Amino acid sequence: MKTLLKFEADWCGPCKQVAPVIADVIENYDGDIELKTIDVENPDNQTLMEEHGVRAVPTFVLKHGDEVISTHKGTINRSDLKQFIDGEIDDASIPMSARSI
Image (cartoon, rainbow, N blue to C red; front, side, top):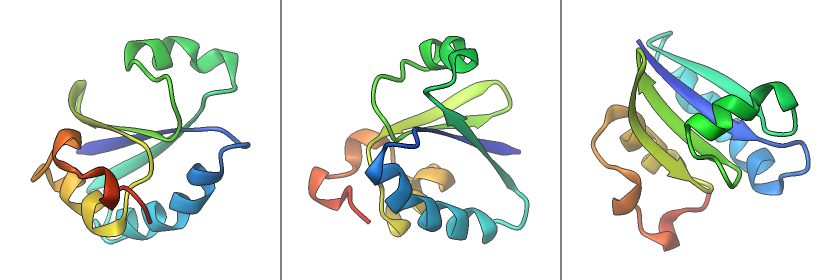
């Protein structure tokens, strides 16, 4: 099973914008992918943030088991999120102009 780690903060506008898109896309995978939301303001999450090199929010880390498949920093639109989860593209191939909702 794949897991999508979503690093966010309450004060992050882009995190709030992309939240409904992520929820909708994840729902379409019928339980094949698990979403874990990580609050970067919670000191208990500091080690996890360091492990994944999180320095900006939102940041998404896609894992299969313990293996990191890909990482994306910044907002992401519905189409690119689906491709990101399916492993068809990586962060470097998403043009900056497409990194919006």
